[in-house]
Length: 116
Image 1 (cartoon, rainbow, N blue to C red):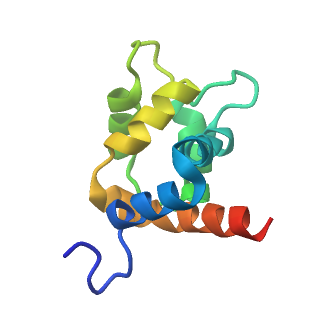
Image 2 (cartoon, helix red, strand yellow):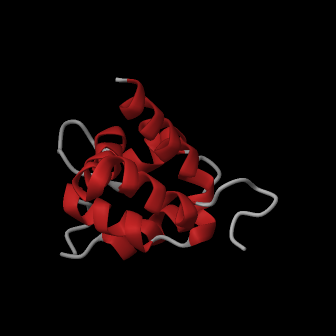
């Protein structure tokens, strides 16, 4: 079973968040992560902004080539950056191992939503 010994894995948490917030709420929470990672001047996530802000989503241990790989995987239009929609799509496509590193962010977002 996913998450045994490590708590709840992202793949287990996603349906819980969807149940609590609904589909639109889930998308809104995932996409709010975009705001944390984006280059404020350019309005998109660049490799530099991802590198600088990755700790905000618990991804500080990723190596440079892993960050570049994430950018490449998520960059659907090939412009070298991630728009908000590209980022949201990428969040759903990420490997479970990577999401285990950042599931706490989603749990905190859910707690914040429930407490407000």
